[in-house]
Image (cartoon, rainbow, N blue to C red; front, side, top):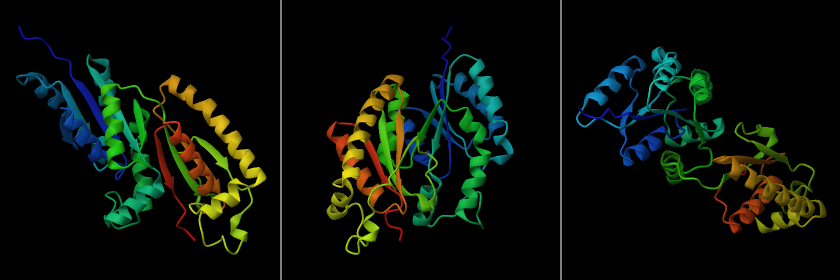
Length: 289
């Protein structure tokens, strides 16, 4: 009598443009049998076929797409039913900041699948609402805002293989006038620091320039704050490591996101990398006027 194999099933859900194809490719490389956009009512039949195959399929990855709106509302019931049976059932959800998704669509000149004749922003908003239940079921959420393809693959592989590693820090500089990034967990406001914008020579530059960085960080308030910020981050990160938190997103903002926030974020990035901490860096608004 053949041994019954209890499969490991990973559902990959997330916003269009957040990296689902990359995540599925990483799972396929790990030996998972991958299916994209399988209608929810067919999942049970598909699982039965995998169990009856010779040999049985032991690792399965299923992508969940908001374009299957007719079946999406039944997805939570399917997951709960599978979790009540034997086997390992996981939901991996990929999130991303709205403005980064919009930028990705602009760069690729693609239309959003949920807003083919409207704006990308409308499509993203509609998709977030449709995927709210799937996000609530997630065993792991990966924020791809500051990740490249290789970093996302590494994150997925690390999750599936159960490799423990220190918390990854995602740093995002931004301008408050353009809104606070929704993914930020720790937020620091730099608007109390001397503003290079009011210096005619520094105004056209950014916090990536040495002159602007020195102006911000070598001021009395800038230097003292950076010292206190490092103390706070050095205190928090080991606590996150011990809790097994995969990543933490730190937002550093100023008025326009071009001078003070960029300079402070760059300094924090350099300090973290010197301590061998894995860091993702995004200057969201540095190119905006």
